[in-house]
Image 1 (cartoon, helix red, strand yellow):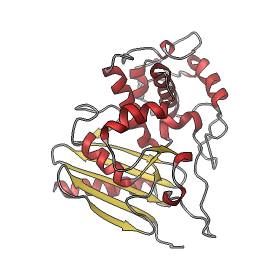
Image 2 (cartoon, helix red, strand yellow):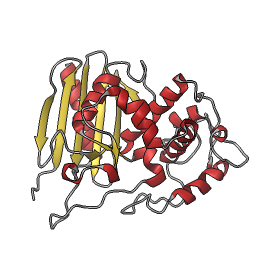
Image 3 (tube, helix red, strand yellow):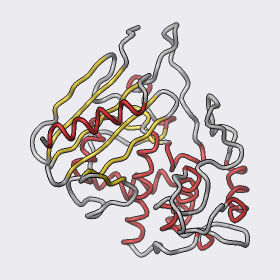
Length: 285
């Protein structure tokens, strides 16, 4: 077992082959947890359903889910993190080994039914990053599409991109291609079970697929000229994600035509973000 952190940095442009830097056991075709980068797929599903006339950005959640009386956010509020919902709902403790495991479908349905009780500020009034909000958004979009969230993402968001590798939930990832951290005895460490919170952070894919995603979405217009759900700073569109052992950064700059993907195991998430941003800025220099 190597002591070197497993890290991969891939960069490219809107033309030409990507450049790859690898350490440890990593490789471009290894399936990894992408954490909150999953939110960009959920946001893209909203974009596609709006374009198809299935939903409207300003639909209240109660138009698609069984929600009790009281103030509720709209789909726009949820995708923009202005829903008034907290980052995590009651029952989720981020310091646990598997923080979302206690929230099954029945418990999540109860949270949604009592959603107005969890709204802490007027929807639209302030921004607060919310995994809870994106889980609710995913559930609302699945209900509107009439199919499970992951199936709707696969058919409406992923398949049109023709990515080189699949985008999957954990239980569908082929074991030989799954890259996870190892414990001191060289055994695979357990990964998170997100259940109903999968729309906020439950997808797995490969760095190679994320690079093609960045090329088509952040340098092109596959998900719109200004894609929903991404962060925007200093001319760069980006998103990051982190789970128990996995950290990822995806970013692109339309002005320079450059994109980058950085993923690491057993590596602090801020350092992965810094690697990715530094790569983009070095290419822009």
